[in-house]
Length: 317
Image 1 (cartoon, rainbow, N blue to C red):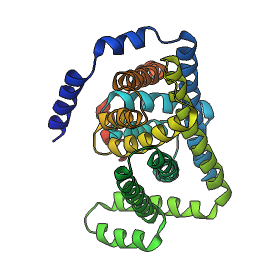
Image 2 (cartoon, rainbow, N blue to C red; image 1 turned 120 degrees about the vertical axis):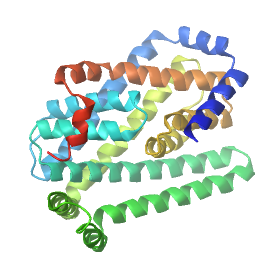
Image 3 (cartoon, one colour; image 1 turned 180 degrees about the vertical axis):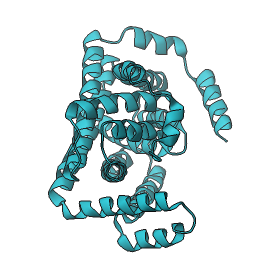
Image 4 (cartoon, helix red, strand yellow; image 1 turned 180 degrees about the horizontal axis):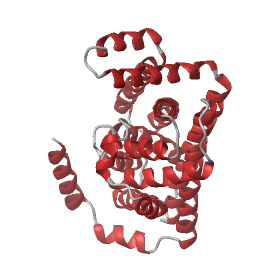
């Protein structure tokens, strides 16, 4: 199925996109916008590290901002190069253990971070879809409403999985006889770490605000790139299109569908009247500049000496 989707995407890009116009747009991109976009993407790496460090420290762990940012640079580079989220999250666990963060605390903080980030993504996407529903054909509005409901239900299920203690106990009973005592002990510690965050509303509120800031920073980054390419949409359409795209990309990462997020961006901007060639140039430039801003992660990854077979044992150590 994945191979089929890739083949269809390649055919559509070859058949319907004027690549001469795409390359012309990329070559003539405003240099100031390019440098600002890279700076914003770099700031995003620091913000992501700060956001995660805040959760680790709130749970009693010790992690310097420098080290958290170092880890995020490496995982962001891995996330852009590899086709799914497993490699980058495995790398984050491995590097976090190197810096002495307990494994259960690592897993708990990462789960809480993802839960809050997913909740923010769902809310922003819902607002974006409400705006888009007023701008596109009426027959699209029901589809948008269904997407909002499905995303909200998925988010609610995620919150239950992370925080609902009876579900943890049920999972514990199911796993007790199926996994080794060592991994069952890790499961219990991780469950306790997750539940402990419920008693820290101030920590969660701060992390929520940071997650909103991170998403808005990424939207501003897209807006800067778009203006650098000569796309004259105002801020609100950019917010709507990218908030929806961000949710699609977040879901696609878990099904190894990297190109789905970029495809969603092209569709969203086309619905808003942007020429398809310009929309492709925008998504391509965004990915390329995001990767460029993550290149320090490649250097740090090389220096760290990580071998990807090490990641298989990250959770076992």
